[in-house]
Length: 285
Ligand SMILES: [Zn+2]
Picture 1 (tube, rainbow, N blue to C red):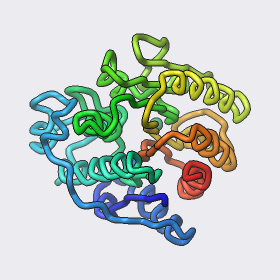
Picture 2: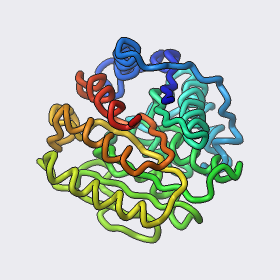
Picture 3: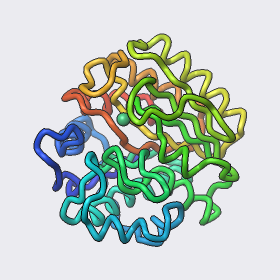
């Protein structure tokens, strides 16, 4: 049994014209419901202590205190509470995965650019990295592989997971592009830069190699930072994946047979709901 965690409270912030907009969750939520997925509003379980599993001691306070955070990542009213709801979805998805039910967290804000002491790139708390840290802290999984398929380098996750025992991180991303990092692999972080214009065949070949590397690490769980801004019509990047590419991508991940969960990161084209539906058709197996 697969599970989607989503909470429509996470559509209640935004700035007109900002690509990380409420429609991303609102319309995807409606589409997945119509497609027959089980959507559950998760209990709001995330706490400041969860945020402190990886972020610095002042990070939660800084986000909840408002003030100027980052030009892309402003201090919306109540953003800390909304970011905790988003983190709750990721924590519930991770818990579901270890119990054998693949899960997806359909929430915003995303998380993979959030570093130890930094908010950036529309991200406040690193939902996926924190979920992995919590699985380890609760001894629900000792070895976790992270696959980041957002078009941007998962610089926050890279920073938080570098040299962390029991974690292998792999990010495929367009270069050159924001945030400008991830040009080389290092330590336990496999960084795969891809040129603008990369299409489905070349992209999926790199995913296949990445999954082989992650499987060789013998993880118990596969955590996916699921960005959909690799799509050919995405307004802020230049890769060329098609709608059907996401079904194939989900299939490839499901074929690992690993316990798995995915968390929404980027993806800004109006077709985002279709891309997510296609991905889950494969990912849930
Ligand atoms: Zn992105």
